[in-house]
Image (cartoon, rainbow, N blue to C red; front, side, top):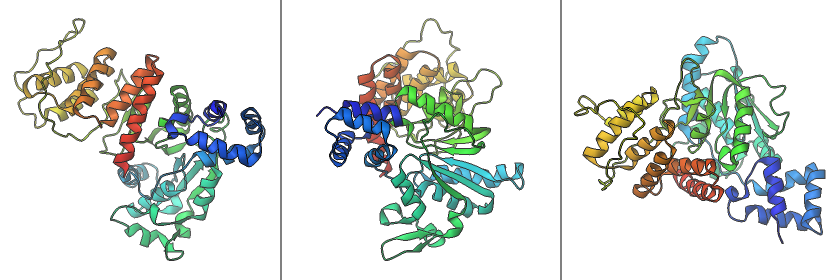
Length: 411
């Protein structure tokens, strides 16, 4: 049975590419729903999807299997909480901090954000979190607010004693005071009317959704969310997604492992900042320093990076300041004298990409993978470059590899 038409419908309606949802996920879900509805053909089932909202949601609930837990990717939650208490609250006395969480899945993320703010000392009465998801089944579970052991991971579970109460021997229920600022609602980010009627948000959490979209759908979703964010608002995404926002005028905030962004200042031309990555030393490799591009005038290379504690940190600082030529020169200096490492090659690749040297950037990203085959950010950049060049099959392969790497890191 050829179910390509169902895959196409799902991508058109929800933006989800079948290949990103796991091998055979859409096919299995579609077969189950075809049997349940008694449709005689795939054509009949697609017609039913177009006509029946209930069937649309039934298929989506089958396809989307959320994998989340409380305080997943905690640095972003803690960073937003600190920002609200230490800076935003002082600039907006008496105001309510507004957050959009989309997709909110089964509710662990919006509840975790409310907990993080409460722990930091922000009054829950001055907080509003609009938690939106396309899956009605996910929303039903989120509204119940009852969670089993799989939603609690890691060693520090003190938050569970403070904000949840035992429901039975194996489950816990979110207490009412934490539920109060969280408002769950059904919605599709790709609906034309999604942004209308909403007040702007001070922060948006849209984590690990954009990687499931193709490039046009990513751009469409980002434009929608951009209209909903106040000018100085913070945008939280997943580990593989910051580069997607750089093309839309965003820059990364300097918060380690948080994947937070905001709009770049409008004054003067500004290049996208480099995504941060923890340095892991690699054995020297026999990669010759690349020859400088003849069309680029380079400043003289320093005789030695004197006074620089970590030349790669300095390289990031220069690139973040828009001093790309100096960053490239320093990187090549280190490459020639110390040899290659995955971090150095990745930084050189990002600088080359930001400078418009796509071919050189692609070669350096590939060399990064030679030294570190599990470099998720290099895989993501290569996927985007492949898409831009029209190599959709190659882009899909890189994206699937990046997702596997990120899934391993999240465990």
